[in-house]
Amino acid sequence: MALVHRRRAATGARPGRWQVVTVTGRPEQVLPGGRWPEPLRRLDGAVEVWARPAPGGRGTELAVRPLGGTPALAGFAAHLVGDDPGRYLRQVLRQTRQLLETGEVLRADRSPLDRPAARRPRRPGSEATG
Image (tube, rainbow, N blue to C red; front, side, top):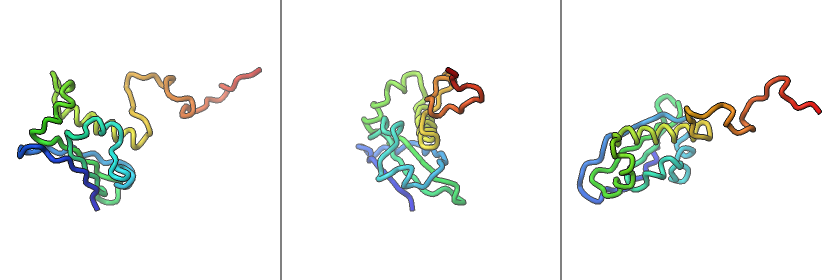
């Protein structure tokens, strides 16, 4: 059973190409109650989203495509200037996958020491001695 969340284009223009990732979890966990995870919410009104079980019971396929010819695409116009819209869409999809699977959007420029202390493994001998 596929969960589909559609936003119709205002004109008859054709929608863009689907971008798909496989995410750990069931479709109802990926899009609970039809609500989009935060990175995808930035594109609300500009994209169509669906989720369905991945082949072989290996999680959920999460797919996104831009709606064609809709003024809502201007919502991410800042990312379009000098940028490929498909690239931005893939980036948002990757961030969504990271958030769903790890609970945070991973950043390459962040030091391991910047991570929340609760998630950092304890090293032997690192306890404070008084």
